Image (tube, rainbow, N blue to C red):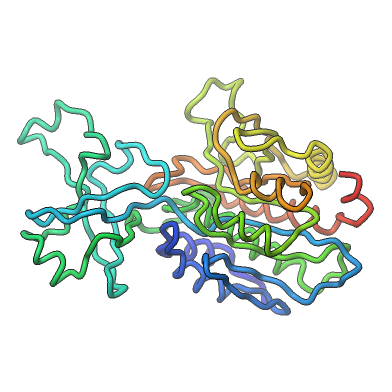
Length: 352
């Protein structure tokens, strides 16, 4: 039975998955493991999708990270507000006055709000405070109430609280970085299930990317790939830069990265993927980035060096409560992935 892609994206995006606390995301992923594959997880909460290998074939890993940017409770103040630290890169404006979801020590979810200074107190004259001066307000009045009644203590993880919405080609939600990549992995593996391929294919939904590519380090050691594709929800720049500098635009097809601060993409594998996109009339955007990094940084340096490319669905306003993605971009990313997998052989991998 074919995967309902939009429903899968919805469930993955809405799942609670701060770095190191990706359990709920993996429970969703289990539902969408394709027939013929088994799934497992390790102690770092990496999630693997695989079947028995053919020892005569090279191994391809499809990787996407399952975590999202979040926060962690650092301390509880006497007035009942929560001091927090960040898990991943935030800007103050993306947090100020927003709703957050806290997972308490009993595994229950508590809603809080990033406290904001309202116009009545001169807030309209001020920029948002620095993140180090923000607190989360859950409506409590004392530290004792927070700890004893709400069961919130230092170490409790926090993520944005939002809803998924789709209208036509547009999807809005938190966590498209990188739950949309997780969906691509699951969808592509479903579409290749049962095909006679030239590679063994393993899916890896890796943990803790937002805090340092940590899960991918372990996943690369476990899977030992001969070739890898890393999927991202890449920040779209089409509303932010001069037209001639746009490299990742919404609804213009998947993005194939060439370089970022963490890696130079294998140029031979890059060209191979771009040629397949052209052959199958799949629109493709190519990006030269001077900042940022992906799990590809870990994969391409694993073993004795692994040919790796980074494919991404453009996402406007990533690392915020409300990011925007395109259904067509997603579908085209899946389609390109399937065609790349079908075209890979031991011989062309060796040429990379």
